[in-house]
Image 1 (cartoon, rainbow, N blue to C red):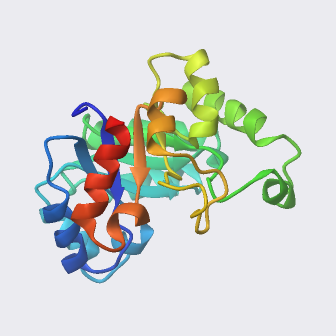
Image 2 (image 1 turned 90 degrees about the horizontal axis):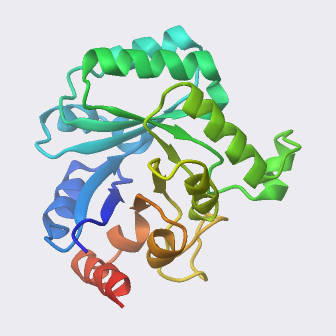
Length: 231
């Protein structure tokens, strides 16, 4: 099971909490990496912490702006040598996605650019409120084609759409957030699934899991995840 790639979402502004998460999720049972989003990256000590971090990490900024601004943003993280993944939102369009991919290759050829599709906090009703007329499934497929045209390295989508995208490209790296142990505990998420289903039913390459691991007893939560995937 050590080949199961797990990104643990470090959604905090505390470097002490991040150090605790990292120290208590050290295991040879899973391939564990750490994901940092806007909360930590924008915090007072967050960025400097990432610059010194000796672990490979995933920077989840969901870049979505005009191409030149995103290009400059990528250039500004050239000092984050252990950044291995960065996200860009498909809503930014083809030119933006291409600019991000091109600049990422310039600053560090090891960085993979992942295209964010429909957020797992949205369902068809909330998507419609934003002005979209397509179903989530059709929109994700459209966004996948856009990201593929831009030459991105992978896709972020809920596990519910992962199976559909795998049929289009078996070698595609698909990372799925919205992972829960129980369907009853969704928090602010709408399209959730279990870790086991994400990997074995829908074909995810990796999962992102945050609160089910980082809230409460971290070591016990990690053991629960390992047992969940084993059984």
